[in-house]
Image 1 (cartoon, rainbow, N blue to C red):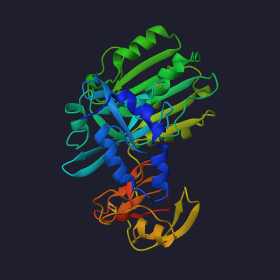
Image 2 (cartoon, helix red, strand yellow):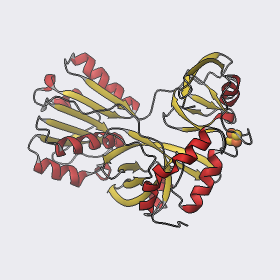
Image 3 (cartoon, protein in one colour):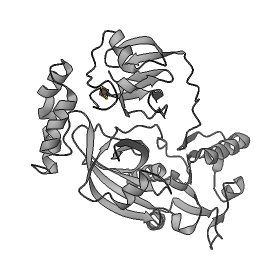
Image 4 (tube, helix red, strand yellow):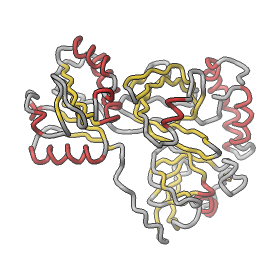
Length: 371
Ligand code: FES
């Protein structure tokens, strides 16, 4: 229940500065302030980013594009970046990373959600999340970027790997990029060709853009390629050796592209992004790791069995806390880099910008946190 319209939420962000000061000095707890703010509007928070769903649009049989307008704590984003979406389901906090398909000037972003059979997050987002609902986001992160020079570009995408590349492509074309662009998108079947109508329209408008699809689990139709990525699919790509290559998709697809690129000995640059990261080491035996507290400019050696809250206190820092059992969220802090382990479940988390509960998180690798 909101006491005022969402438009006011963004304007109020700067007026919350005195409250931020009181929290920083330890006179108020951020979780208490947030609880009060949420009573005024569900998207109003001191520092955390919440966003309102303003549009839903199906862009493939199994992919939905959401438009989200963030509150005033959003620091902005670049096309090609990603963000975390957070949900609370049956008392369990869940998060997933999604790529931005568009970044708009009014602090709105678009993300595309692909249905994952048996998943806990995507079915809810696709089937239950409605226009007007509010959900929590992380800040945007990621390094994928469009080449600065007016030189040919080859985009290779598999499955939902199309999403960050589409964000970059939309922006580049809107800004007048005129060098040749070839996009090859690998999907299992016709209905999974995300954004197909828009890509065909862009191709009709921009003579420098060529889009081809390859079906990996269905018979190819006229004009389509067939099967998984192979160098034979690049036979019609002109001036290949001068192109910058951007590839995004599952780790196996990205590894295939990297092997091809190395074997071809191309002089241009290759940027890749795999959305199933290489498996993290599951070794949780006792060891020392390096811990960085970004805002306090402190470094420490940490034991990977003790909580980050204990380590912070041992350093003389005074992070807010309540239950010290992972329940109240008072100790929530942002992960800047590295991997942390949830001491209750041994689950590993390594997305930058992810909120973590210090009292039940331990460093699994060298870690930096925003404290
Ligand atoms: S102190 Fe309550 S969740 Fe960490």
